[in-house]
Length: 78
Image (cartoon, rainbow, N blue to C red):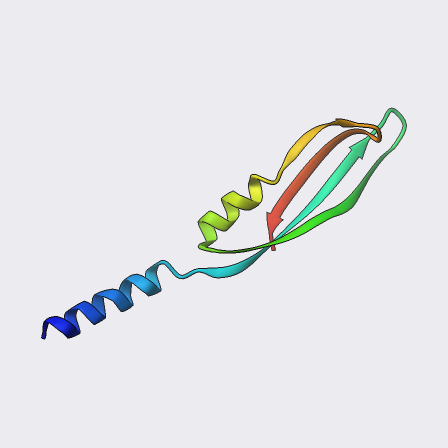
């Protein structure tokens, strides 16, 4: 009896925290004085829960300036 209760509890917990593969796609948008353009800037696969994968994907976002001008890097789960 105890064994079956423990097995059911473990099965329930394993289904509740299901980890899947989530694809995070990033784009970078550059802006200069006269032009702006956007290009793909990486893909990442996170095997995690949806909430954690979303947080890890958002952590890839940055903004700043480099030799091409000001940029913003946006990432999202697809």
